[in-house]
Image (cartoon, rainbow, N blue to C red; front, top):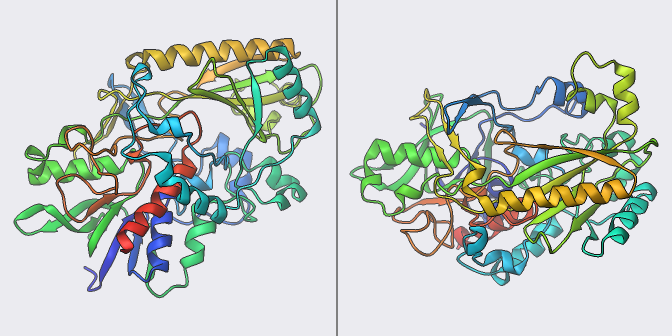
Length: 477
């Protein structure tokens, strides 16, 4: 046991945890951050297609079950900075209406509106140096062909957490979407937040410390006072923030409720792990007769109000090496290269709404196998809109001279895992309150995407950063 007592312990170092730590440490609070994974190497391996995609060297290897008992391995990343090291740095705000309930699409309301989160969006955009880039020539021509063929489709510049200098480094420019930057051109939780407080005497980051349980006051399991790690160490604090991600934070809380029996009296206990969301995401790869020379590529987002819960983003660089990881091994390298040179990728995202039956279930502690029970058939409006949007956009591409093929990311594609500890004012209908405090418990807060009542139609990272900044400010005072 550490003899030190901290003001706040934060479990996890991704967007929400890092933002919370940043605000607390700068306010003078004694903060301990515990991260399950290690720091990523800076030797260039995180930009290597073979190691990142073909071998999956840096991805989670832990097995899960789906709701039907089948096995899967979610695409989670356990390292300092969390999934922000690997994201495509698309940093968009949720729209005002996406903080409101939308019963027809099975969307829950936030406990507050956009106006409350707006100043934290401002701060997050500043800390992450959000920029917009002009479309490269080939993409601009494609944008014009798509939008001119159907007035319903429009394009906007995609806000990106990328430094303009990335354009001068072709390797980084081609390898930021799905890779971890070595040069620091991509904004992430480690580089932009944790490194800024690393030298403060009141901030401590311990990597390779997996938290497996919560400590509570003797005789009062609803009062959390610390955490227990797999290696047997334990640490105490006035407050604990769960920020291990929407697939891990609910498991830690579930295990505590089950082990102590406090779940029998906690009104929100049945909702721990419920309403799990991860967007309906599909990759669409389009091919033209001509080779593409644009490098950055991921600078535009398409919207169409016929599909109000859906967006289409351009993906980063594609080539034969990347496509070869998805093609049968029998396909010759020269064929993969020829196809890859003519490929451009898109990422189609639809807000998936909430179903209490879509949930994360703990495996019952360290030795158990957790379950992600998620079924699109529980979300018929979202499922139908996603299919319609893909069909429509694919037809637009065909008219623009490109043939496309799409693939649903599925449950293993957990990049946007959200909503398993949903925020709200009613303890019987949510797990945490508007300030991130777990209903009916003292000293326990949630600082990651688990709290999001809605996933919106855009990437959630900026909203999770903003939530973390707001939570940090609340805890600092």
